[in-house]
Length: 155
Image (cartoon, rainbow, N blue to C red; front, top):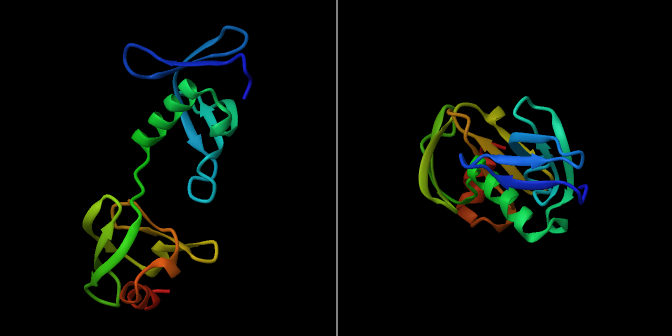
């Protein structure tokens, strides 16, 4: 990212990007290019109209204050609970209700169809519920035996 760019919040809490030429862009939104595979790399700062204004190769390369603003904004927009354990599945036919333990607490959701389970690399999964909320299984091999057995029925 260009060192001459400045990022701040306005009085309404929206991100403001000041470009090297002095152009002010209000309502800037950070977007991860690879939110699951490489969440700390490849972040685009996009205008309210959806145009890319700046590219961040790595969050760690930003000055601390700017990095904090980007991370806060990303956290407020992203909600991808990580499944730690499957407690129960109502049926092995879809739609089915899943009761799970996540990094954000216990919850249940409806899986409409097996096509709503996507593989991420060798051991990861992204599961979309009937409302479009994405649940992450970071590493199948790290799950307990019961959870793996339940998931195997859908894979």
